[in-house]
Structures are given as C-alpha cells and as structure tokens.
Length: 222
Image (cartoon, rainbow, N blue to C red; front, side):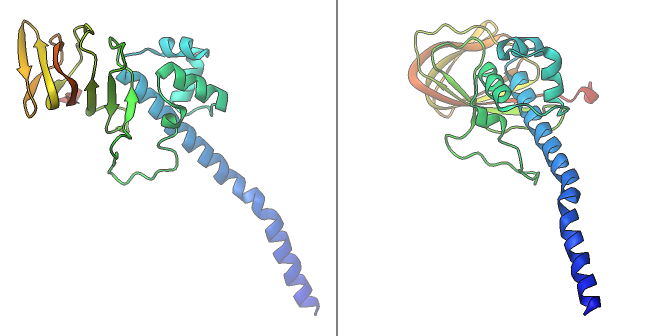
C-alpha cells in the first residue's frame, strides 16, 4: 500500500512540474511566430520600394522597433500589427499568413486570395495581387496578377532590377518600354529588362488582367 502511495505522489509531482517544462516550448513558438510575421512584413515593404523609415513613420513606431520586428527579435502587440498593416496597405491577416505553416517547399494561392499590395504610382483602385510569397533573405522572383480598370489614369515609368515577363489575359493595353510602345491583346507576352523605364501607356480595353513575373538575377553570377 505504501509503495502505491509513493508512485501516486511521484505522478502528481510530475504533473505539477509539466507546465514549467512547457514554457520554453511556448517561448520558442512565440519567437518563431514573430520571425514569420517579420519576414512577411519585410517582403511586403520591399515589394513596394519602401524604406524602414517610411513604414515606421506611417505606423507610428521607431525605425529601430520596425527593424527588430522584421528580424523577429520582438513580438508586436495587436495594436502594432494593425498599425503596421495600415502603413503597408494590407489587411492585418496578411501579416499573419505564414504563422504556424510548415515549409513543405510549395505554396498554393486560390483564386482571389493573393496578397494585395499597393504599388506606387497607382491611385484609382488598380490591384496587384502577389501570387507567391517567397521566404528567405533574397528574392528570386515575384509573380503578380495585375488588374487595371481606369482608362484615365496616367502611369509613371517603372524601373526595377531583374527581368520582367508579362502575359495579357484579358483586355487590351498599349505598353510602353523605353522609346517603343507595344499593343498587347489577350494571349500576347512581352519580356524585357526591368531597368528600362516601362509601364502602361494606354488602357485600350478594360478591364485588363495580366500576369507579371519579375525574375531577379543572382548577385553571385555577376
């Protein structure tokens, strides 16, 4: 009988101690979640050509705090997440999209669920949906589904690193590349160097939907 009581007491002590053993795991999960959120925030900021200072000012936080957040060294409050999302022009849920997702080497984005980003130079509701959110310190490519709807908008000339491939899905567009213009219809494709000034010249038939893929070069190859 005494032996049974001793065993029961040992079990009770183990159960009482288990919450303490779970704390390091909870802290690790919190740190991992902060890192995942930070990587998404950095990726969105980079895609819009914004600096740490730009986003920090819009979000009402310091650039140092934003840097710690992007590198996963601090866990943001809910209020900070909401402010950061507003500064980046996305919904708060987009910053949380990778938390808890295991990296299996594949991503699927269902129709209408691509991350919507606000590109500089567009003002009238045109949308750019990012179809794949790359992980890691360096971008290899960025695929966008672009929807253009307002014929009256004047677009600036875009310039960026890498090579861009666009494929028109619907509508008609006159696309300017350097000194030349190309009239694209559904099924047409255009490939060009991103450092040549480019962009829509005329939205001939709206709505226009096109796939835009930017492929970045590997610095090691230069």
